[in-house]
Length: 149
Image (cartoon, rainbow, N blue to C red; front, top):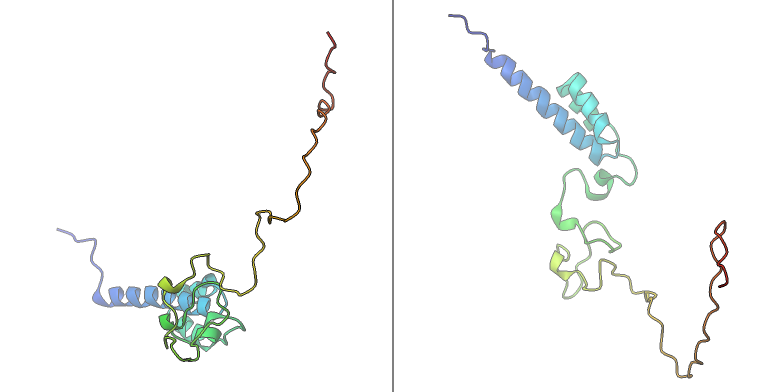
C-alpha cells in the first residue's frame, strides 16, 4: 500500500515559518507606511529573511509605526475627532489611558469647540412678508406647446 500524502516534519515547520514570516512582514510593512503588499512580497519571496528586511526598513513619516510605536497600544487610541494620537497628559480628573468609547459626545464624533452651522433657519424678530405665488413654469424644451381649447 502506497502512501502519497506524507510530508516530513521539517517540511511542515518550514511551511509554517514561510507563512508566518509572510504575514508578519505584511503587518510590519503596513505599520511602517509601505503598504501590506510590499511586505507580503518580501515575506513570500524571501521567507524569514524578507521579514528581517522589512524590520530594517525605516518607517515613513506619519505612519502608525512613527505615531504609536513599534507595537500597538490600544490605550493610546482616541475616538475620531480628537486632535492627539498617543498618550495624553494626565490632567486633573482625566483618565491616564484616554477616554473610552462611552465618552464620545452625543452630537457625533466631532469634539471641536467651533459652532457647527445648522441647516434650520434662525427665527428673527421681524415679521416676514407673505410670499407671492410663483408664475407657472415653462414647458420643457423640445416639448409641444399646450394647445388652447
